[in-house]
Image (cartoon, rainbow, N blue to C red; front, top):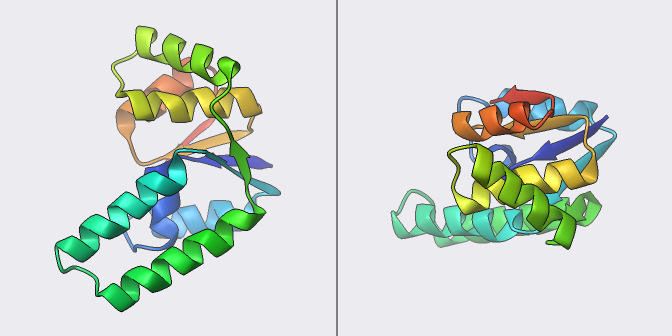
Length: 137
């Protein structure tokens, strides 16, 4: 099963939240993990924010970053191609989404994934409307 994670969902592998157990279960059952090329910068941004807010230490930040980079060596990364841009524009025109959220939907469509995973309700609705099977975490 090819499982696509948006940044909000994939970050739960590293920062415990309400959906972390579900994210880990989906990760373990997947035959292939998929991300958009924007996922890593978005997740690093979240880690930086946590450090700036003193919610994690600089040592914890470095550890999380190391784990993320190690995990992403084994994932399929969808680059920003013309097909992804077309899918993204379609998602933006048909839904109330932010640009980056629409890129995740556009990337999942381009990769023809089996499951789209996100913690964002509007993004999940847009992915469902686009014909993707969705797991909201």
